[in-house]
View (tube, helix red, strand yellow):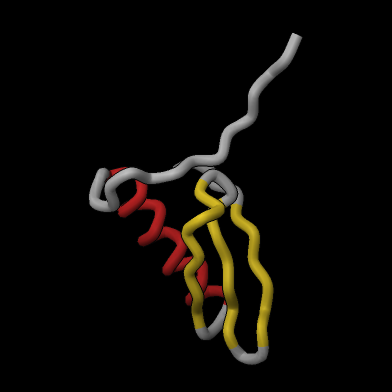
Length: 63
């Protein structure tokens, strides 16, 4: 298992979020646990090649 960072918030009764590595791809759930399940599925899709032309977020180390 590996840890994957994500950002989430509640909007009314919906829980919204995205994986920090892939901020352009939002998902939602009916609870925080449901959102986490959707985020895990999204991570699988984004890293397996199912979704083409995936945009990524990264850090650049400057000297």
